Image 1 (tube, rainbow, N blue to C red):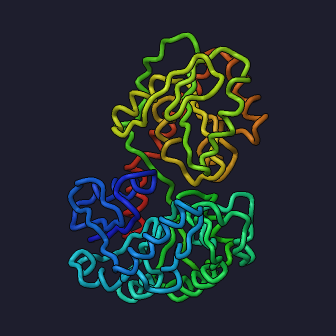
Image 2 (cartoon, rainbow, N blue to C red):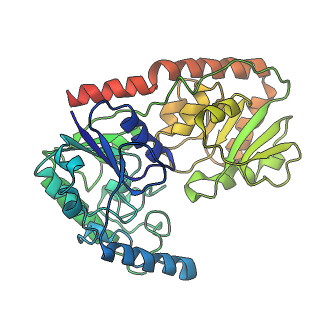
Image 3 (cartoon, helix red, strand yellow):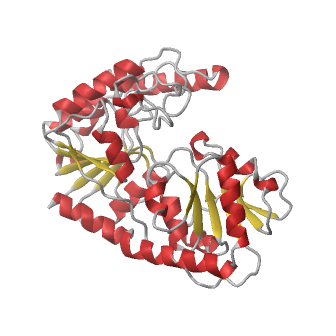
Length: 394
């Protein structure tokens, strides 16, 4: 069985790593088409676009840089400006594919009409890494549930992937998604990677009542990410990724870190956190073996994302024996339930939960993290995930 994957890029965040890992695990003529090709992995190809597509994106990049607005974001939902199907149908990768796997198709490179054309010829599996399929353009709607009633105009048009458009077309986008999903529902299977996202789909305005929906939770390479059980320092070490991505909620932790009572050392990836004396600052780590080594140098990870599906970073840290303190939202709740981690609700509760942790014996924290690591090894490995996909496709 040959699978053609389509995604925004071959390197980047969790969705990009997910699609690339699926390609690497294949044994046939699988391929990956991307808008942005950054690496040299065999089987990855650039998804060509029209001159108009590139021109509109260029105009938007200028508008965003100088005026913090865009004009043509997600226009491919309404019009075939990118030439997606016209390019795909002439490639051997598409012609030889039995199934098309979609991942992230926002970010102005994929015509939604292409989904209709593809659905006439191929089975389509859409792995959902965020909420974009149920919204007017945002990848997450935070506290808004307007996606359930068909009201696309939330307060969050400034967030990705909307990019603060001058002309708000979100209602038209939502209506068009509903039409397309209805038209291709017999050939389209949605794969939300968390039970939380499945619940979003089941109540969403854009998703047909008879839509095929199957949850397959993310898995990680547990041969790489593992607990080495070499922790022997005496002061708890807290890891924090200080991201500028507004969905990652970094301000929740950085604004209170200096006020936390208790002894700890802070390990920061990104910019330093103001007011914390005992901290070490590191550049982002791309190599996964090196990242696992880094995880094994800390005890606790603060994960304050305000919008999240089923985080690979959380799974990686857990597998490496790190106790995760995560926001009580989205798929994080599934990952950290049953005492596999600690969740918090709001800034003050985060401070409280961390201070409670720092009062516990370090051995107790490490024991809890080790049990969570063993659970990840048994339930959320790449192999378990692969088996689930093979069962779906059989």
